[in-house]
Length: 227
Image (cartoon, rainbow, N blue to C red; front, side):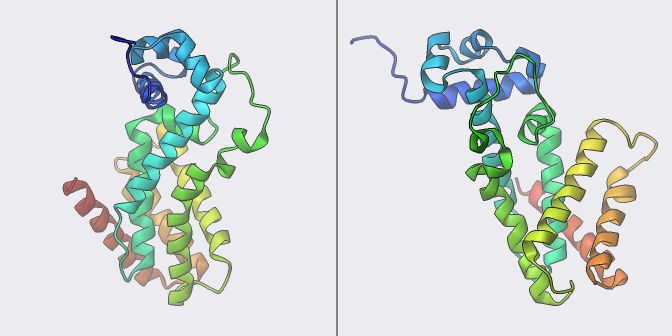
């Protein structure tokens, strides 16, 4: 019909509108009418494309993981897997600080009583999402290079990746909650030494691990400066 708007991009518009609302106002702003208004669409479009807010939020979380995967892809592969991993840890921290509420949603830290639970576990759990796995594969690949380098005792790269994932996201969660207020530079005073200790625990030499983390910080700085 003449004058009728094309809605081929409606799902993307709705997701981006929800991402913006999360950044500006937090999860309490996510309602069908507010998302529809922010995207210039109707509430019926929200329900027509997603079925409801829970499904939309699943799509928003997947959007966040795709953004994280793209950010990880910007980290070049070097001959120092520990430096690469620390650069990715800093990258993940940056992404979390850019939209803390989106980060909370991605990692199951943000829920609302008005969200109707999804019935299918595969849709409900971020760890089973293809978008999550596309991001996490960058970590696993670097952990595999770490094991192959001989700087970590022989073990499954997936296990190291899970441990490192827990360490990094534990730090980010506490930092976002302002638990490191007594530190002038929590990245240098907490995050980097923790990464060094983790590397040493895996089997690396402390001096070499410290040098790799310094190299990772420089690598990350070069990525940010080139953006």
